[in-house]
Length: 102
Figure 1 (cartoon, one colour):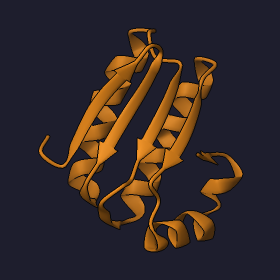
Figure 2 (cartoon, rainbow, N blue to C red):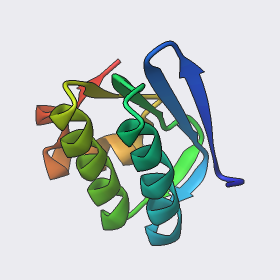
Figure 3 (tube, rainbow, N blue to C red):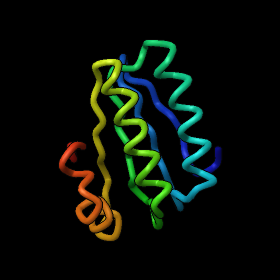
Figure 4 (cartoon, rainbow, N blue to C red):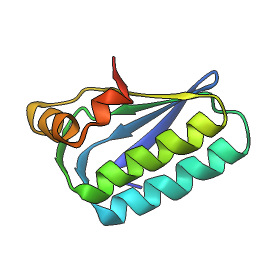
């Protein structure tokens, strides 16, 4: 868990991701967040991509999967700290159509 950390702010779960978001990290993050969502005390997820240098398709899948899961429980997903490279990936993949940038 060196390249991501979690922060709670009430019913909001803030995930700080640094460095790379690849298939290894995406799987680890997915499991961690899913457990917290299923406990029923998370309403919104904020992905903080400040300092993230790389994201592949598994990162997109991880974000989309958490979006679907939190929507099922009536919550929302937000992103912040999106750099130019990651912004391009979000735009091209259509993630901004369902996930709000704050």
